[in-house]
Every structure is written in C-alpha cells, then in structure tokens.
Image (cartoon, rainbow, N blue to C red; front, top):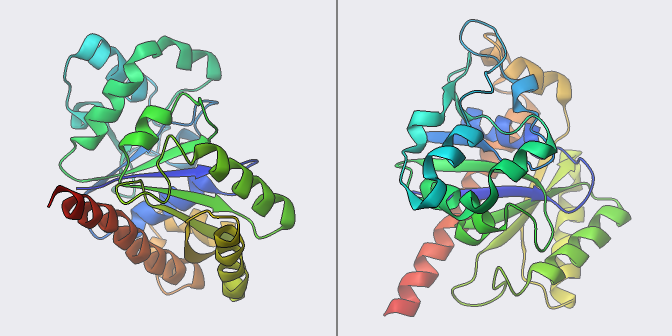
Length: 261
C-alpha cells in the first residue's frame, strides 16, 4: 500500500482540506494522518460519530510514545473514526508538543509505511530539516499543494531545489514529486505552465491538475448531506486527483523494481 505526503512550500494553500476531501473519495482503505508540526486542523474540520471533536489522547502523540526507542505499534491502534467514515490519526494541538516526539519520527514513519492500507499525510509546511522529513523520505510520493500566483510558484521552486538531495528528486529511485493547484478548474493551463517552468529549472515535478476552491461544498462533503454534492465540480476534481495521485505513487514502485532488476 502507499504512503503519500501532502505539503505546502509556504502559507496555507489548502493542504488540510485537500487531504480530507481526497480521503472522502479515496477508492481503498485509508488513514488520514495529521502531522503538521505547527498544530493540526483536522480536529476542527472533522467530528467523531457522536458529533464531538476528535480527542487529543489518541493519535500522533500516542503513536510516537508507543514506538519510542524502536518498539512497534500498529497505526490502527491510534486512529479515530469520524462521523463521515474516515479513519484519522489526530495530530498535535500546538507546536511545543512536537518536541515530545523527539527521535520517534523515524519510527512513526516506519509505522505509517507498514500500515495495511493507504496513508494520506498532511505534513503542513515543509523545508529541509523539518521534523516531518523522515516521513517524506519514506513516502511513495510527495504532493505539493499551492495556488497559481507568482509568489506561490516561486516558493515551490525554491523549496524543491532545497529538497532535491534528501528526496533524491529526479533520480530513478527517487521519491516522485507532484503538485496540485487549488483554484478555478479552468486553471489547468496554469498548472501545466508551472510544470514546464520547474522543468526549465531542472526540477522534475508532475502536474496533478487543479482542485476546485469551494470551501462551502467541502464543508458539506464531511456531513451526512455529503451525497448531495457528490456530482459537484469539487468532488469531480477530487476524484480526478485521487487517480493521478495513485498513479504517481505507483510509479515509484515500478521504478524501484526496475532498479532491483
């Protein structure tokens, strides 16, 4: 199964809502993992089956404590169900809690990679040396979420340049990099232009298209009335994105097999 990390180069372009939306249309068993080091948002976006906020006692911190020192712990023991049928690994509530994880990050990454389903990870903002780097380095694909404005694209290029070595970007066995633009679905041409711009700078990154910016529909999607919007532009764009992300993650498996042969 696949471990797929979603990140931003700067700001808040919609990583959390994109991951939560994707999980809602994902075709297979999956877990949403909130690993944003500055504090996750999923506890504010999602609710448990009783309509209450997700608890902080079970999630990333409990998993980190369980695997400290290299011990093994099943991810399934630390996830919580949501009202709309998702399985969520709740993140930290504040940045100071990240320090408590310490050297557990590589073991957290190993546990996520060993899960018997797909894991969609919200890693928040990323940079070389970020606490979540062990997770990115174990990922089958890393997907950047951004807007199509000039500053966002410039930060994406700068961030990918800094991550080229740790993620082996462009190498045969490197981690596949993709990006998705949050905005008007008609911006597909802009997404393709970004891919070409990155290629001209020697950076290999695949355009995964555009996810419609529609906060109102996204809120409804995570309620009992979610079926009412399943044919919306947003949901169609998420379904398309899910297929492209799957293909991106699968490409690493194929590349790795080719290297072994």
